[in-house]
Image (tube, rainbow, N blue to C red):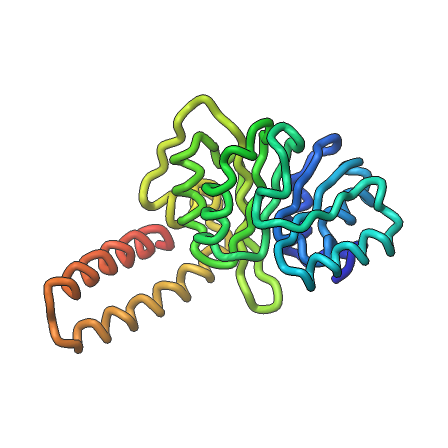
Length: 232
């Protein structure tokens, strides 16, 4: 992967960016995504944010190598602290766990003024993101699921809305758009997840029973039923 040819998961993120947007890529690593977006003439200005020194320097070097210093500002800082309110229209966060992405959004809510679009690619626990989006006035308008290097990734596109989007537990877990499409990759992901959950349930049945374990079994059983219903 480089700034000319992205991985499939980052390309899926890039595909949701429309021409003319200004983008902040949080946790930008080598800044491949913002460099690609500028080279593809999708954006003219972007911010690459990194909190760790090594990746920050990699991003700085990549932007210099691509001769894009006039178009991409590489900033060192934690989460959304690298942007000011009203500075960008789109925020991308890719390659982190769902709970961490949700935490970044929650801590940086005051920096999201003027942002109209969030493009989020969690490696795990996308439900955490969908719950945060629902609780904070964002509507999921598109989703994509794909397999790359034997791993399955989800990409979530969310846009500001004045209407409250009320998702069911099924939609929160599996994704409202993905649930409608039920692609082969979607079925593959949840069939594998179901196998793992049934193994955990079997281990729980063999363990010494307690009130807390009973509650966990109840929650797990509900999750299993949801998934079984979805992939029928």
